[in-house]
Length: 267
Image 1 (tube, rainbow, N blue to C red):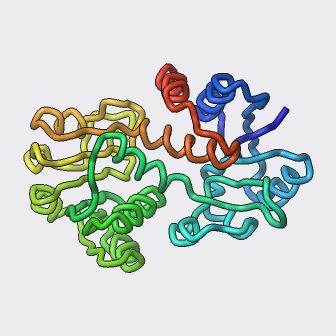
Image 2: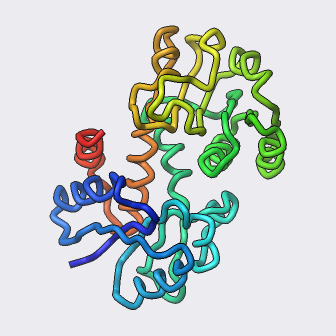
């Protein structure tokens, strides 16, 4: 039996185990997905121990994504984003580190038939999720503007992304009203009925992705749907980052429908 898992602290809230195990069951793979909560100071020992125990792969979540970089051989995207959320122990030498959050963003837009090349995109937020979003959008050919309450953080992110611009939230309404793509990469709207974007700025030609998945139907998505915009809830990002990890670990096409059903059954 293969063992995969999740490193984080805490991880009791994670929806990854049922999502991944639904994939194993669907394909008849003899595997289980378990959670681990090492002490924040013991990340390196936890990764070494996982390798010694023959664990096939790990996802990595808060607070370990950035610190994991020092313990794996990262691919280019993980290095650019500055965070690892997937570790593969299947190769020779050091474990390989990836950031499948980027693939989660890219595949979420593709699933909803949203073409990113040549678009004007606004990313709200400047944290880890926003970094993954901004790099994916820019790599796909979008012009990226990062908007954040603390302007210096937006500027720091924009400086790392080719051609990106940055600003505060005061100009957000104007930016969004002229944009083709909008991504909320903040926690605004999580467990609360608030939106980070003025409803008056939304329009029918906009594609809106909200990284928040609790609740699935956020205020931002409801406002966007009312004006006829394309809406993408945060569960799609969560699903497709897991799908990407599943496929890297197993070398097989993930049963997306089964994994999606298992995820949404628990939301």
